[in-house]
Image (tube, rainbow, N blue to C red; front, side, top):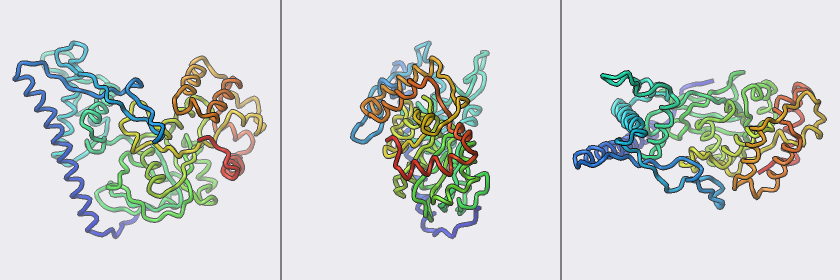
Amino acid sequence: MAKKSSAAPARSAAITKRLKQRDTNTKDKIIKLADGVVKTTFARKEPVIPIPTRAKSNTIWNRKRGILEMGDAKQSRELFNLNQAKQFMQTMLHASTIKELIDADKTLSLRGVFYKAKHTVAGTKENTFDVQDESDPILEDLEVALGALREELHIFAKKAGTMVGNITIIDNGAGSADEIDCRRMGSGGYAVPSIVEPDIIQFKKCEAKFVLHVEKNTVWSRFNEDRFWEKHNCILTEGGGQPPRGVRRMLKRLNEELGLPIYCLLDCDPWGHYIFSVIKQGSISLAFESERLAIPQAKFIGIRAKDYDECELSEAVKIDLNDNDTKRAKEIAAYPWFEHNRGWQKEIAGLLDNGFKMEVESLITKDISYVTEEYVPRRLKEKDWLD
């Protein structure tokens, strides 16, 4: 339930000043990028945009910090290269859109930015963009090229996460400070926005002792209906499978600023293991954001390969591994952050030895509320988790 907050005017003024300075810095970077292209052109040289390489080959595992980081490798986006000319044009188009957004003090969704730049090139039948899958990677390229985060580019993604529990927040996202009591969000919960920086979301009152993050909304609904967050004094979140940046950033802030442990309840399959890897260490494609997204202290509490026997589950819960599952499991086992982790090596070996995967929902075969009343409470009490 939301109500207007009596936040101090001084805090609002400070936030406005900080946002204006941030916008000025971002616009200066865009102008510098454009000026570089113009100067190079007038010097009769080929315009080139340097883009940091977002690939595994340019990803560094910082063992001390427990996160993935981006290396120094860059690739050149060349206007006169027939294989790169379209991407060069797309990059400049999106940079122009971002400058417009900053000047107008407005934001657009990823989908909106795609349509803003989508048109047919004059005198041709060629579109600047055909599908959004072309557009989103260009925006990520601009993030790393400009050294600016997506919210600094005035771009947001669709909401794809939910939260409920013993915390009250202040949400400034609608232009006014709304107080959100996450204890009174009903069956739907609070929709986590894509931008959850301190300028937008502030934590007011929190009694929760930990955060339980579950993979899917279906599982989240069971925990919410059973009032798990109330009985165990926690915050309950979900990310619709692979959690979007907004949810990951929210989890990071809850862990870092409020000191709340993050426990993850995910499927027993390579995809669930990968989701945990992304939450804990960061992702390869977004390694430049690991510092603000990765949670090295996150714990994996299940579902586990051993649960088929320990929980006495039925044959019906088995989902046979296919060749892609096996290949992916072996790739994940070889990740530097899992390679020397005995617990994870045993877990992935157990998955492969079983020859099948299991979803969290499989625990329903024991009892509708088995996962909320027995499985997770026991795991937490026994500290039976994987780091």
